[in-house]
Length: 227
Image 1: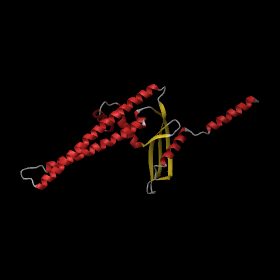
Image 2 (image 1 turned 120 degrees about the vertical axis):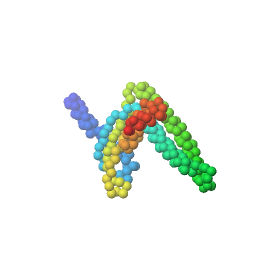
Image 3 (image 1 turned 135 degrees about the vertical axis):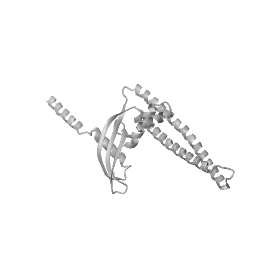
Image 4 (image 1 turned 90 degrees about the horizontal axis):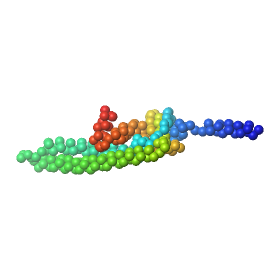
C-alpha cells in the first residue's frame, strides 16, 4: 500500500513539473516585459518567434564590453564628423587663400575657415585620444573575462535569446516587425537587450577588437569584415 501511494505521489510530482514553463515561454515572457517600455502600441504586440541558446563568458556577451564598444563607435562617428569639417574648412582656405590682391572680405573668410579647421583639429585629436582610451578599456575587459572563464568550472553565464515580433507603428496604422537579442541570467531575468541589427554590427567590431593589438589593426579588420 505504501509503495502504491509513493508511486502515485511521484506521478503527481512529475505531472506538476511537466506543467512548468519551457525555456522559450520564460524567454518570451521576459521579452514581452521588456518591450512594454519600448513599443508605441504594446497592446498590438504579437510574438512571432523565440529562440533560446546558452550564453557563455565572452567579450560579445558581456554587457560592460558591449556598452564600451557602443561608446567607442559613437566616438568614431564624432571623429568622422570632425574630419569632414576639417576637409571642408581646408577647401574654403584654398578658395580664400590670401594674395596681394585679397580684399578685407576674403581675408576674413580665410581667417574664419582657418579657425574652423584648427578648432575641429583640436576636437579630432581629443576624440582620437578618447578612442584609444576606450580601446584599452575593452582590451582590459577582455583579459578579465578570459581569466574569469579559466577560473570557472564552466563558462556558462545565462541565456541568449532571439525574439521576433510585430506591433503597430507610432501612428498606429502599420504593422512593423522587430527583432531583438536579449541576454538573461539563469532565471531569465533580463540583463541587456539590443535590436538584432545593432547587436550584429557590434559583434563584428568586437570580434575585430578581440584579435587586434591596436586601433589601426582593428579598423583594418572591421573593414575586411564589412566589405
